[in-house]
Length: 343
Image 1: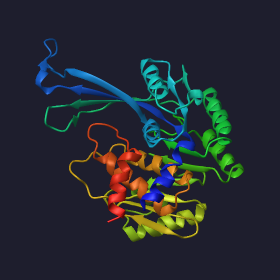
Image 2: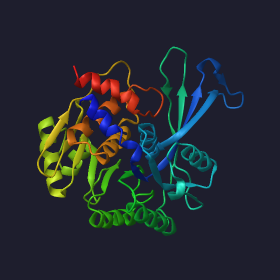
Image 3: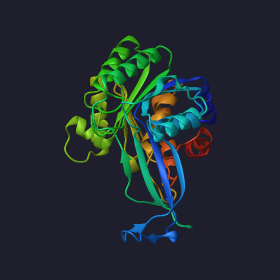
């Protein structure tokens, strides 16, 4: 990508309005000092002394974090938190971000706040080591009163945003934001607003989702296509092209160390190889950075290969951020992407 084109695309981000519909969670990091280890006098078990606690929005919040650092002008989180301490912390963190509009995010007594608690052993001079995580999740179906509010919000925002991102992060279907009712509403919206970019991702796979722009990893593509085992690059190209043609929507597939691939309904398939690693990596958050960058780039008028290049570079930035769920700004992406493409 040429420098002028890069600045032309990213220069439009400040005028974009993007809705992020999905499961927002609180990523809470507990930094443990191994030099301060103790043994409990009462139980004889090891004691981990936490010397610092830091929190940030996670899951759909990670996509939002990336949109914020990209400079997207107006971002609408659509989701909920519980009326608990974690909910207060999550809502406060979202509210403090530039460009984030909180009209569509609410706290409810019917749910608890989705929280990932991540203990990290942080020894000086060594990368952080994550211990077993402690999660807070909802295991019952999202109540109708909550679902109705989400549906009404999605309908309202569809008329004023340039792009809508769906992220289904829950382990058990129907317990989060992206319920059957919300998906049915998205299907109505994509019929009524055919020019609206809607891009979807789900940790359980996209089976049952309406035909919007799909973003998935290669394992999820194989499962959706009913293909056993690993897919080669050529098989991935073929399967993605077939899915795009059937759904009449663009399909994006992340390939880990092999890069990222995109296929259009018209039969065009583009593959961008991964950026070589530059030391230790941590893949947490890379997929969400890809989703955010694809949505922003496409809404700003990028072509398929341009969107892939931007998302691929963002993922490379994020995987080199250790001990956090990272993000990639335009200023970080520029030297990496332009250095590679203008050699």
